[in-house]
Every structure is written in C-alpha cells, then in structure tokens.
Length: 499
Image (tube, rainbow, N blue to C red; front, side, top):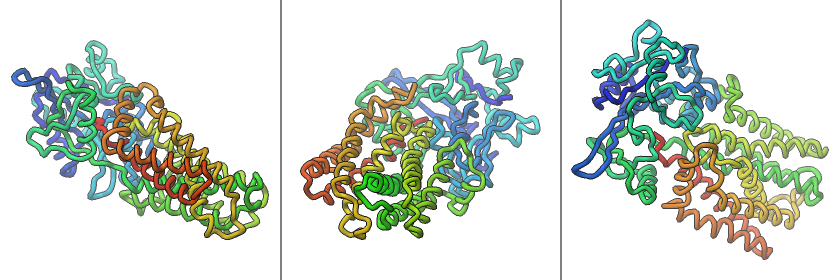
C-alpha cells in the first residue's frame, strides 16, 4: 500500500483552501506550512501568464528524511505515509536537509520537526485528508498507488503526470497533471523580483536568485511562496572546524610517532589539544539541536542508516580513546594503539562527507569526493594548529617542524586542487542544480570571500611554507582560511531555493 496524491492543475484555482484546511486540521504554527500554493508568473505585460503549484511532502518511496534521521523519529508506515514520532525527535534538522522538497519544518514551540502525514488520523477512520475534503474543484485526489483500481493509479497509467525532482531518486508519491514546469522546478524561477500580496523575501536566497538571473534572463518570476529559513549556521561551521582540528592533530601525531619524527608515545600536549577540540565539536552539535536535552537518544535509539548516528559513535569512541591515552600515557606505546587512534581520527574527519551526501536537498554538499576533502582539511588543520602552538607545547610533545611543514604544504595543495575542480564533482543526475550551487559559491559575496581564502588562506601559507619562514604565521593564516571556506560551504549550500 502506498498512499499519495495526484494534483490536477487543470482544475486548481490557487484559492489556498488546502493550506487553510491543513493548518486548521493539524494546528500548524503561524509561518509554517505542510501544504502551500506557489504562484509563478511568466512573460511581460500585457502577455503575462500566472500558474499555481500545490507543494507538500511527497511521501517518498525512498524517503531521504527517514534515512538521515539519527534517532528513527521518522518512519515509513505500512500504508506508505512518512510520519514522525514527536517523542523521539531531537530537533537536529537533518531531515529538513535531507528533503529535496522543503516539506519539513521545526515547530518553534515544541522544537520538534513536523510535516504532512496525509492526515493519518482521518485516513485511519476512512476520511480523506483535510486538503482534499475542502478543495472546491476536486483538484487534490488522494489514493493508493499500489491499488490498480484506485483513481490515482488509473490516472498515473492513463495520463502524462509529472513529479518533483525525480532525479533525486526519492520516487515521490505526489504526482501532477498539467502543471507548468516552472511551478515544480525552482531552477526555472526567480524570487528576486518581489512578491504579490506578501512581504518580499530577503537574505541569501534572494541574493542567490539575483546572481542566477545573469545566467537565465528569461526565467519566470515567483510571486508568492512560503518562507523557508536557513537551517544550519555557525554552530555547524564550528563543528566542522573543531572536528578538523581534533582529527588532524591526532593523525599528524600518529604519523610523527610512527615515522620517528615525534615522541614514540603520543605527547600529552597533542592528546589534550585533540580532546579539547573534540569536546568543542560535541558542544557545537548539541547546541544546534532544538531539543538538546534529548541528545542521549542518539545512543539509545540510533538509526544505523544515518551517518549522523554512525558519526556520533565514532566521535564517542575517538574521544574515549583520547581520554584514556591522556590518563595512561603508556597506552599509546604499542604502535597498534596509535594506528587505532589514527583510524578513528580519519573516520571522525570523513564521516560528515557521507552525512552531507545524505542531504538530498543540498546538492552542493553532495559533491563527489567530499569525504576525501575533509581528510585533507583535517591534515591542514592539525598541522597548522601544531605549528601555531609548537612553542607552547611540552618538550616531550615536540614534533619535527619539517614534518609539520611537509604535511601543511601537501594539505594546502590538496585544498587548492579541490577548489579548482569543484565544478566537475557533481553528484549523479544533479548536474544542473549542482552547477547553480557552485556558481553561487564562486560568485557574489561568497566569490569575494573565495578570493580572500585562495589568496591569504592557501597561496599565502603555501609561499611561507615553501620559504620555510614564519611557519606559525602560515599555520594561523591556513586556519583562518579553513574556517572561512567551511563557513561559505555550509551557508551557500543552503542558499538556493529548492521548492
């Protein structure tokens, strides 16, 4: 059984009855929507055409929100509805990043994610969802796509129906009849020209569309839409940055120990530094939760399909081993223990790449090779941090400056290489959307920042490393450049409208 909708836009009049009924039936907070009507206008006066598109959760067959949720709060019911357990949600917003359709929101009163659940409380007693019940033109048709006798199944087999972002591989179960392409493909529209009957949008999404208008001067205009706030901010940048330092310091220290260019037993200074950075990483993660008091659920009910859950256990094991080695220094004497620390550090550095790959709504973050880039960034952060702090670390923790210089130089070259080839690293079947995201990262305010990062955060430190001069300064510049690069990546990845 797979419940879903066919929305017949040959009938839709854009009256918003579905939106109002949904909000009333499900007590949806002001400013949030489970179903909404988007207005798009094409052409120039006097030949202007306005079209409507009803947008909502697609009850996906392969729901990315279910896969990415770290605590199994989202689940696919036997009837095909994707629903949320409010007692389990920790408010991490990963499901919102995983959804390519902007279908979820956080209830600010409860801190819990919410979405369309096909009015399950009505469906279970034989009633239609509220949106379908009130539609005056019967444009919203609910039904079971797995039942060949149902109306929606017959419409799917007999008519030319469209789905939203089918290239994302989600197999959406909301299909559209006679909908304009501009209504369901946000890449064909611009919301930078003001809204009708509503406050004009501002911020990064408008700036993103203004930049894109240079490449698509004939784009249609979004004149009415639901607001979509930025989800992840500086807490996530801080998480990435601190995790790079923690993993990188441990990796470089192990390389130094095994190569004879540092203490055979990992020094207390680098161990303490890595553990402190890892603690900051965890603080940033917990602080970004809407329900931080529930973070323990990550350990009690993990979703092993989610890289957020897997990463939580990697960080816990990595931190536990660092703490044990700090308390018992001789623990790192055997090379095998150092290798285990290095392996956990490498996984801690890289797992976010696979986590971001599950964020189907943020195509920039899905870039191929991102786990490898995170490993390079960890080596950059670790060697740079050790160069900056080398003079204040205990003498028994000293690592050969030549090794740090070589690692930092190699990592900077790797970071430069990733920046130069980023445009060719599109995920499968998302090339057009990915190209837009890369243009945004390389243009506008992020473009100016990119020049600074390349000049002062990569090329500048590379020159100093090559000369072997002012190495602490080179490390500091590299760290500042890494922070700015990771911040731009997090923020610009969320700027393009996806619905």
